[in-house]
Image (cartoon, rainbow, N blue to C red; front, side, top):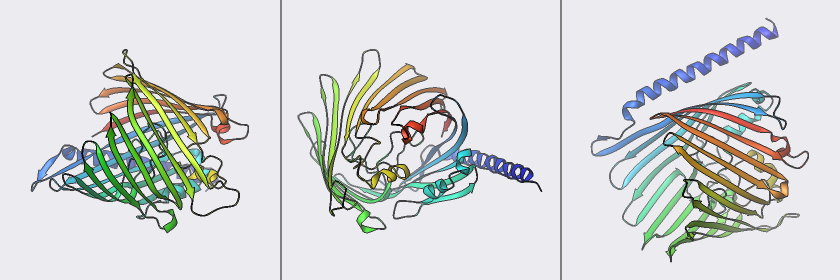
Length: 405
C-alpha cells in the first residue's frame, strides 16, 4: 500500500470518528432533553443541562495570508442534584474533538491537555492521531452544604475572588485566560471552601487547594464587607511557595462602576537572579451610556512579568495571578451593544505598551432560535517585538453554532 493510500485510509477513519462523535453527541442531547428542566424524585431535585457547540476557525499570518483551517466540536454536560435545602451535589465536564493540521507538528499538545493540574486526575485524551485530538475533562465535581450563615464545599469547584473584569490578581485558586474564546465556565480547582456570612454583604472565607507537590498548594483567607456603598475585601495566605497579601474594592463614582484589586507576592525561598517580591494591580471603570453601550476601561500593572522561570510556563499553563499577562502593562478598552433583542455585538482592544503590541477582539452574536445561537468572533494581534510570539501570532477568526439544552 502506498503512503498516499495509507494517508487516505487514516483520513477516512478520522472522518468516521468525527461523524460517530457528532452522532453520539446528538443522541445524548436527545436523551437528555427530557431532563433539561428540573424534576422531582423523592423530594430531591435534579437538573441536567449543557450545550453542543460547533466552531470552525481560520488562522492567518500578519499580512492576512496563508490560511490554516481548524475545527472544534464541543459538548458540555452540567448535572446538579439538590438533595434537600442544605445538601447539593454538582458534576460538570466537557468533551472536545479538535481537528487542526498544526497538531501533527506539535504532538505534545495532547500531553498538555491530558495533564490534570488538580489532585484528582479527571482529564483524558481519548484520541491523538495526527491532526485529530479528542479530550474530555471534569471541571466541576463537588458536594455543598449550606445553612443560613455557613457554607461548606468540598471537591473540584470554582473559587472566584476576582473583582475586575479582565485581570484578577485576587483570583488565587483558578485563574483563567481572557483570551480563551471557548471556556465561559472557566476552570475549577480541587479545594475545600468554607464561608461564614454575617451582617450585610459581609463574609469570611477560607480556601485550601492541596497539590500533588505540597509546595504548589494554595491556602488563603478572604474577609469582605460593605462600607459606604463599597464592597471591600482583603486576602492573605500562601500561594505556591509564596506569601500573598491582597485587597479589592467595587463601588461607583458619578454613575460609573469603579473596581480594582491588587496582590503582593513574596517568595519564601530566595532564588538567584529572580525578584523575590512583586505586585500585580488592576483597576477599571465601567459605564452604561444612554444609547445602550456598555463601556469598560481597565488598567493593569503586572509586576510579575520578567520573573526568569515563569516565561515558559505562560505558554504551557493558564496565566497565574502573580504573572498574569504577556507584558508588564496592559490597557483594555471594551464596548458592548445590543442592536436588537436577537443581535448583540462587542469590541475589545488590549494595548500592551511595553511589548509594542495590541490585541483586538470583535464579536457578534445572533439568536437564531430560542436555544440556538450563531456567533462570529476574532482575535487579531498587531505589532510585537521582532521575533516574539506576539509578533508571530497573526489573527484567528471563528464562526460558532451553539445549541443549548
